Image (tube, rainbow, N blue to C red):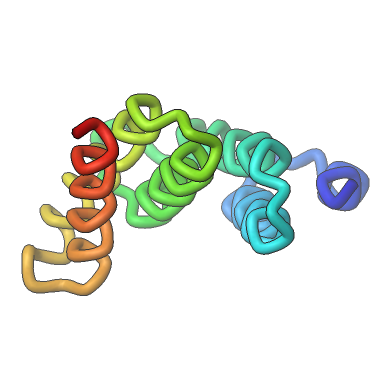
Length: 118
């Protein structure tokens, strides 16, 4: 399992450790291991929420939330996915603006959730 590599490498809760978990999640997602990637993204998000103040709008946190939404969508957890897409979309809009491509990706995936709901 890929996550064991990150656990061996560092027990520190730093931005680098969070990014490593996020990147492992990306690899797992590309392999179709969506449950595993959710675990990795969850570890990344847990660290990010500890190291970034709650009032700070973090694009890094938004990126991980967006990826969690994508994994949940793949697993058929449509409503749960929306719970990650929405905060990511809001942060991206506030920080990057509504003309930015990352905001557009978030908006697109919120639309996908509503499409799946019927």
